[in-house]
Length: 450
Image (cartoon, rainbow, N blue to C red):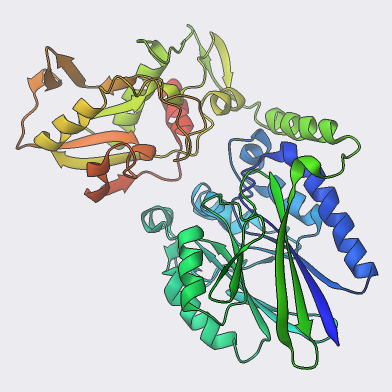
C-alpha cells in the first residue's frame, strides 16, 4: 500500500499582494480536493511573506500578512530576514499572536537566550496512514542586525545537526523549511542525506522540477508570488519509506482568475494607506527631489542621517527618495510613499585614507543611472550621491573646511545598503554600527518635526 503526500510551498512574496488572490484560492481549492480524496496535504511558507514596502504591511507591522496566511489555510511557516530584522523586537514578538499555523525556526533565541514563545524548533506531523513528518525551519544568519534588535541568532548548520539527530529516530521523513539560499540548500543536501526535502527561499531561485542533491530534493518558487511550488511524495506505508518525490511549479499568471481579485488588491492597498494617514508635521515650503541634480530633500535627509548617527560626515544616493514633499501637511503615508525601503542608518569608523577612496568611488559617472535591485532598495535608479559635511573641490576632499587627514579616524554615516560589499567592497571588512529598528523614513520624520 502507498500514500501520496502533497506539500504546497510559497516563498519570498515580499508583500506583492497583487498576486495573492489567485494563490490563496488555488491553495484553498487544492487543499480541499486532496482532503476529499483522502490524501494528506500541507501548506508551508518559507519566509519573507512580509515586506514593509506595501502600505498594509507597514500599517499593521506584518499582522495583515498573518491574516492572509490564516485565511489561505497554511499549516506552518518559517521566518525570513524581512520578518526577522525589519520589525523591532516587540513587533516581531507579537507578529504571530493571531496565527493559526505553526512558526518553525530553529536558530533564533530571544534576549533571555530562550526560544521565543511563538516559535518551535521543529514540528512533527502525522498523516492519515501514520507517516510521521519532521519539519525543521531555519532562517538566514544576519547576526549584526539581529543582535542590534535584541535577538540571538545562532548558526543554522549547527542547529540543523542537533535537530536532525534529535528527531530522526522519531520520524519517517524530514522536511527543511530553509530561508538560507540556494548555496546553503545544496550544501545541506550534500551533508545531510537524512533530509528528504528542502523547501528553499531567500535567493529567489526558481526550480521548475526541483533539483536533486545526493538523494535530497530541493524546491523553490522564485519571488513575489510568481510561482507556487508543489511536492508530491509517495510513501510505502508498510515500510514508511519514501519511494518517489516529484516537484512542480505553477505559474501565478496561469492560475484560474478569481472573482473580485482586482478589488481585493486595491482594497488591501487602500486599507494600508488609510491606516497610515497619521499627521507628522506641516511644511511651510515644498521639498522637491531630483535624482541627478542638487535638490533640497536628499540634502535634508543626508544631514539628518549624519546627525542621527553622530557622525563626522555622511553620504547617500538621491534615488532613495522616490518623490518630494509638497508644502502643507505631511503624513506617515507620505513618508512611506517616498521612502518605502527597509533600510537602516549605519555608521562606520575608518581612517581618512580609506574614507577618501570611498568618496572617490561615489563619483563613478555610471552609477546615477544604474538600476539597483535588492539590498533593501525599493526604488528605480541609484541617483547622484549627496553629501553631508563632505566637500569636493578641484579633486581635493574636505571634511568640513579641513582637508581630509589620511591618518585621522572619521565616523561616516550611510544607508546600510552600502555596507554589504556590492558597491564598496572595502566597507565589508570594517566594523559597523547599525541603528535599528529605525528606517530612513523614521530619520526623516524626526528631522522634519524639528
